[in-house]
Length: 592
Image (cartoon, rainbow, N blue to C red; front, side):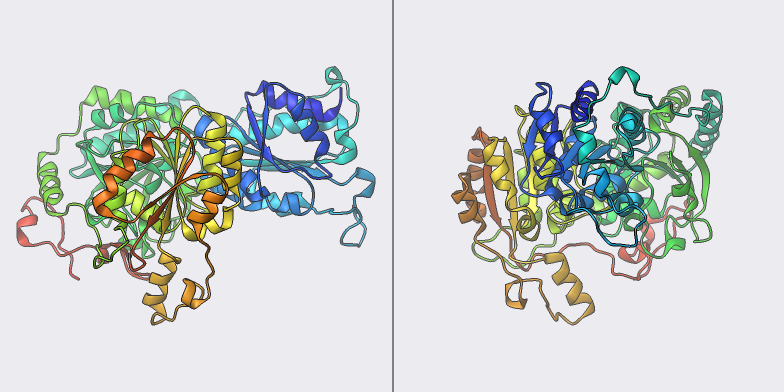
């Protein structure tokens, strides 16, 4: 059997239905084998960065391994940004890179390159993959693939890379004589040990006066396979989320207090800052959540973290945050123990805390920064809220980085079953469109909503052609504020509004996006009139095929609220008056 055929057969047996990539001299054998396997389709991207991101979007949507295939040299290095997205967000992806023939590898020679387009991708990708290997002889292919697949899903999932020289791809191998990979399972925690640790955490949780549950993106990448609304109801405590978890509960769930962190609404931050116990599930408590002044975070709270990575729980040691309870385990293993303990104990009985929360909910409702009305523009927050009424339940939504992500996380009203994906920790511009392509390729009958800014779309503009080529049911909403809005806001804060390269007057070059989309064959709609918005949205969501929507956003639209750099999280919060402080509570008022 040809080695490249063995590789593709292996992927098909693992349930991979699509691979993404671009053709190139060192990848032709792999792609030839893809074309001859009726269980896998090839989606040809316009750029290798998009291929890696499409693999990422495919994996987030399906839970299966996402795969990108490219040639050597620049083809391989262009995968790096998408690989980082998967690595930092715990998404299982495999980068299959072609390489120059083995006899053209430079090896230990003191030269930069021997073969044409030779590049040491294993070294380059080593810090952003769980496993990166160059095939040294054809007989090792089974071992390398089995180990790569195992590592992509084992523990905290992530990206892996297998680099295959061209001559090995076309080598003839006997599958029955290949040696395999056997994982070491001795480090898995015994069930009774985990149950004991969870019991200790839950005893402290149910003994708290002001308990709070924190949900993070680790509950869905990978999907923990658990009924979270049921769990939350059983626990009975208020819930706050990271942005990556804003979709895990419907917006009207009675215990949902919203998101928290540097760009989050005040209510969620108010809840966290006045809790006495935080039960953190699926979150590593990034700096976007804690703020930069760590000792001020959750000032009086005992914190419990359940995480597969010990390092994520140890990183606060010596920096002012005490993680009092540390359980190193997969959430899929830990959550059944939490549910069982909650059902045995009954929901939290903290009427005083609930009364305060209800008062805060009525006092600190949705916060929208509304710039002065400008003809031909929409308010981003108001638009997102209106849009959320039209996006169907069960739909997958991809958001890019920048203002569009902030407005979405703070204003979208999620329905049961909807999922929001973004590259939460690497956050490259130009992520959401190729990621949406990955999702649409996996499930071509299900529409996908893609939200992206003008800066992000410029980076992946060519992928609109991929959408048209495959008639993908993607609704692309362009948040067109004619500039890099977050950067403008940053420059206003730090550099006296000395704009450089953040909008057209300062050197940034954009195009007529609607005209470009139309020229590619997309149905194109422009939204710029709030009086016509509902009628326009009805038309957009009634359309069966791909549609491009140019949403004109006021260029003066800003992100609000936001914690200024160098401030403590509590500095974002308004002062409490005496009526908010019950005598039996230890909640302290804030001063501005």
